[in-house]
Image (cartoon, rainbow, N blue to C red):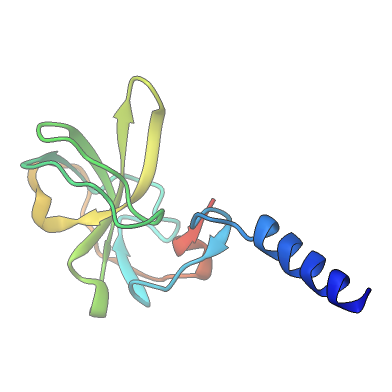
Length: 127
């Protein structure tokens, strides 16, 4: 009987374990970011993707070559290769996330990114 309970607990644990990154805290890419304001609510610039980017995990957004990206934050220190922004996709609406700054080119500056903001765990939370 005890062995049966043991296997039942193991089976339930396997069935209830999430198989994706969704709904969990991911590793921080950086401890600070540059934004246009303290809430990072205003776009810094518009960029155009120079190549396709397929994300590694749920912190990132997929981008297609030629797609416009609204950039809201530029990660600093260890994450300075990544920016945060949004892309508009007709099928899924606007999607927010991080992407490598090397896959886009700046097209149109909007606001100066001169406000340094500390990142929080919510900047890298997958939902």
